Image (cartoon, rainbow, N blue to C red; front, side, top):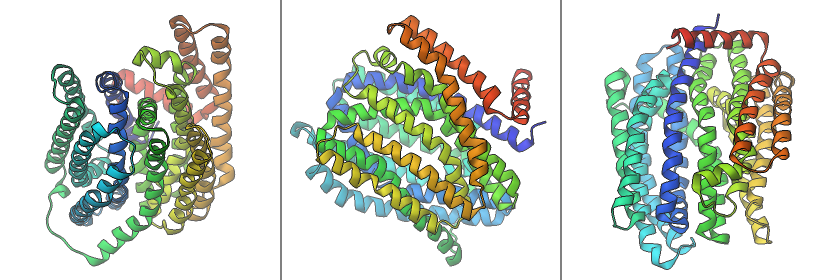
Length: 509
């Protein structure tokens, strides 16, 4: 019989899967309409300007990771008094961070926007409008992060599913408002997106205050706890900067070399990746607190088993969802967007391949952060990842095409997987041999076996809706069959049979 903790992970994954399906359906529809309504240039401007603000998010991302880690750690130790103190101190920290981000955004960020980005002169005013609203939206989100961290630490993922219904409805309303109002659509889109962010964050804060006792702020100061949180966040800051530079830094480089149209193509590719990768992200959200709790309770064997299983299952989930997209990218994008901008097909495929490799690393990163001793880890990982930006710049400078940045991203994802394994061998005594045997070898065999028949059928036919149905359904069947028989152990097969039984009899929910 599956353990209660594994059942909880499965239940949370199902709730987040419902959330993912809803958001994915709305996102795919809204991106198509927004792209058509705004046009390629304005859509690219919106994404690259928003990208500047995201670069400032390294501060909040660091504190978010720290907050989630400390909340889950105290829950693992059943220390609710310390949990309340940690929450209150994190709220104070986020208020300080908001002030710092506002100062940085209104100085360096504003200068960079108006002097370095390639934006048509007639749209500079609209770009600044978007920028200011993006800053305000981001600050609202920052102040809500401790409440989001509490939901994740308590593993109440059903809250996300319910709130997502409201969010999806609001995003649909945005689309219809864009179609029926003649006001500058780029500015209107930014205003409505900001309003949606405010409403959703208000809902999360209200729910947390009513549901969790620790989510009632009471001024608290403890120098040692503050130093512990900031020390963890400080070293995590370096790694977070590297990840942001790897993503948004490349986006800005592409804008400087090729203009906003290439940003639109990259943004669409990442929308495709988000739609496909969302289920894996949801699964990661479900297992992440449990890894930290296992570490806090000193349950080494259970933690190691969960790291191996979550690495493998993350890859399998993405494999199943990405296969039809990778094989029939052009057909799907044409069906979705009607007119597909240049580079979108290639970008979409490369981004998904990078995500497949990265899915193996996510549980390893969670395990490293769970230890709290991340100084050397972040120095090594962050330093390697930061190399991607200057290397990509040099490639573009000497005349390489924009997709060269995507190829470099894949190479670095593979390199970082190896580094993560090497670092965790020292940090938690993870066996690289066991990981290679129980995870890497299995996912490679499953991936190769699953693609043989769909690829054969694809090359036998010309692109059409019939081919899409045949290749897609065949890929789904072959991937599920190979995962079950080649990818799962006997105990894992038993577990999933039990999960299916529970779903049918409604015992899991």
